[in-house]
Image (tube, rainbow, N blue to C red; front, side, top):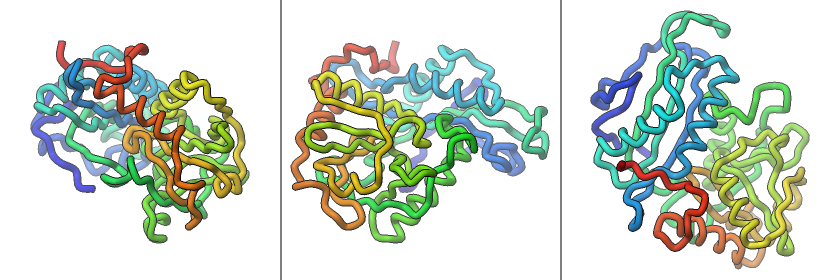
Length: 308
């Protein structure tokens, strides 16, 4: 969907007009994909005002990803948190999607370059349902992609960096070419990995299965949120290798991610998931969205008000 422009972008320590937030065409990040990033959502709540969801956890993962690739960040985690809140606040946004980029700028042409500047950008703008306005209630159709995720020991799947999402582009583009919303990638050994930009949960006979970190997945923050709720619900949840065929025998399947939130899967490869009933998925959704309407108590401190 098209980007809805806001007024200001935070770049290297100051808020500047949206159109002036530019970088050189030979920046290292553009040449080699050296950009650690995070996507976050800010929600309008009736009890705490506008809040960024799990801001500190996202910032902590950003620093982790940047460290793996030698991308410097010239700010503390607390300074990044405050800059995120300020960017939402100064743009006058009640709800927003935030994109935070730490990347190597213009300076050298070599994969191992050490002389490129460390650039840092925070953008905040309105963004609706990533997988479609009806997806949360009705679910989406998905297909298993012919593309496999990278194997362990090739590139680190647990780092959230721009280059990793070339795989996501192949998976999602193939899915759309096949007439559905999203694709599901398999890991190098043929077991289930994750969606183009989402983690997967498969429910069978009251048990919940989800691929482990070793299945070339990103350890999603919304994934962790859903797992926290499932444990609260006394639902058995297991991280394990999942053969493809379990997708076709599942009672329920749902996807999680900052963009996707908690989205049910209605069908995979043209086969309907279960009977259409989604009791566990609906309860996870209820608790998740309840954080933002006040019906779920935020006992973990996940809501970070942008004011104050």
